[in-house]
Amino acid sequence: MSPLRTALLQSSGRPGSVAANLKVLDEAAERAAAAGARLLVTPEMFLTGYAIGDDVPRLAEPADGDAADAVADIAVRHGLAVAYGYPERADADVFNSVQLIGADGARLANYRKTHLFGCFERDHFTSGEQAVVQADLDGLRIGLMICYDVEFPENVRAHALAGTDLLLVPTAQMHPFQFVAESVVPVRAFENQMYVAYVNRVGPEGEFEFVGLSTLAGPDGIARTRAGRGEDLVLADADPAFLAASREANPYLSDRRPGLYGPLVQA
Figure (cartoon, rainbow, N blue to C red):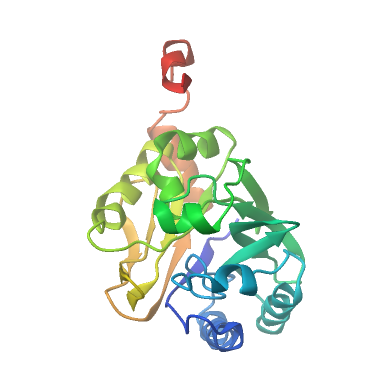
């Protein structure tokens, strides 16, 4: 299997305007495809903006809504898969979600954030209840997660045990927590023997200051690419052959002793 070239779109787009953000996504997809990418990942809540307050329910759409159709059209026209963050409406609930759409326009997977961060998220969203959501893409098992979720080691280990090869983490990481991008994410990739694509918003938005530093970390704990603090599109490869060799050399999963870990999951 050939490496999966993955593009990370570090951008806050235009908060409050779905149309403007779809245009940003379309332009990024064109650039990513020209650079050989077969997967493009956006930040958390990219479709609408993050700090949009009471506009969250107004702009929320179902997973198969008009915005999903527009993203599918972008994926098909540029010939690459797209994972995008958005507010998802499902009956009376609104979830902070990420959806993966294939290069053929098919909806491959949809994940709802399970660990909500701070009063803003708890006031506007319902927590998801499914920890591991996956899809197969170009020979790799893709896992989905959002921002704060990756800071819980149990969450990422669950993905590792389920066979995730590349974990996509759209995020809205703010100051002063940049150490998550710089240190926690590469460690998560190493201790779980997977690739982790952590894709952030950037700059001021409402009361928040997003720190950028989007990265794709490898199973050796080394960043394959890292964006700075401004708008950016960076690319790196998730290499199945390197991943297999790394897992053989670092047998964390096979050396586990689950019988000792019961207290970790007790309330």
